Length: 397
Image (cartoon, rainbow, N blue to C red; front, side):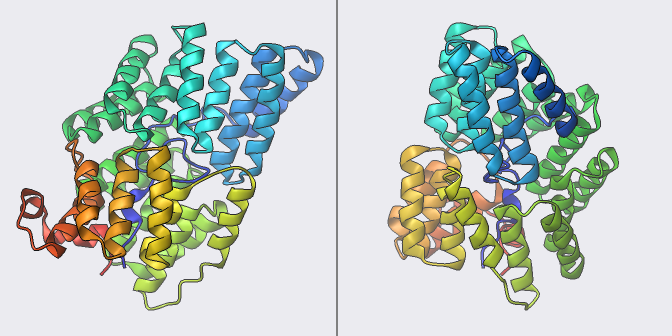
């Protein structure tokens, strides 16, 4: 039974903005409800304020991430449509549309819109941020790094430092990843930003197999912002990986009550299975239907789920579709793992090699490749580098 537990932040369907495998999305810096209400009142007075409508659209995307309610995407679409009707070529409007596309996992469209925004305003740090996120998912890591570097030049801060950290981690530079997150932590001035930076430091510690340090960072994130659900989920994850299953399940129940994202539902289900309890996927299936109805296409999450808990052939179909649209490292790993579970280790190895080609040391990707190589009877460098103890971090059994 393979676990999603180390994928926190990578493919959170509505939550992406870009934290399911560590996408470096900035934390929301204001209380969203109050901010939206004030902006809505302003737009009643100034209905032709196209930038106000674009800002409202981005805030709705943030609400989808924060609440796990994909209905906010439809609201974002409406606000951004109004903004585009008023000023279709404005860089803030185009950046808002790119943000919505990324939230719905339409990364090629997000890249196209972000590039148009930069054509309109070459100094838009926000557009460079969305461009970087989209290019990571499309497998263009050099292009993503260029966008991050340009964003750092224009607006050094939590959002750009976090993206720089992720870019460093993807190329295997763990020291650089920690250094940039340290900069983000030092630059954080709000509880939300501080919680975000500390949570990401916890994720890095977990990827380094230090569950105790990870748990400490998650705890410090909650000290900064007790409502920061990803940090609570991090504590649940650390408890599960440390064998404290009852504690993990209690924490996951709190997480699910706050934010029933597919990622957290799957993690809770896997902990229940490890504890000898049935994994009830009813709520997960309901979320799957809801996301589909609101225009969020998340073949990646469902390919991973089907490979481990459902139909491997369906997993291959979904993973191929995801990889065709977004050929990044995570999609390559998902397709390789699905093929392996479907009994095609030779073809699987091709994608596992792509997933690990940049030097990224993510335990799950390394574990998947090592398992595929073992199935082929190969004693390869990847297999020799893999510490068998990492299996406890990559899966439960």
